[in-house]
Length: 101
Image 1 (cartoon, one colour):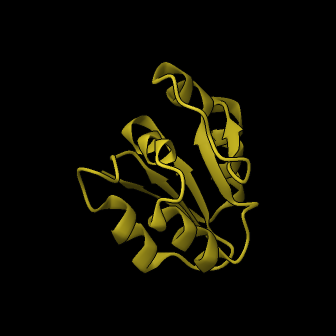
Image 2 (tube, rainbow, N blue to C red):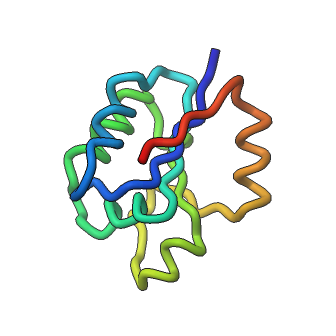
């Protein structure tokens, strides 16, 4: 059973990423959205590397493009920018979804 994890809180202010990491399994997907995209502003942030390692691939790492652009940030190349249509597709491709605040 696969899960789409949507992280909406900043890695600097809450434990959403750490909680997500504890439940992450191969086949899951991770979407950074809202304040969650702030994690991409710190290259080498350990939690992002741990997310990729636990998934076993960087193909399931996403961020909401509009949220990133609104904050004037850029993303590392191994994360994929998506729009709302792609987010809906990801929901359909996974068995369930969790939002971490």
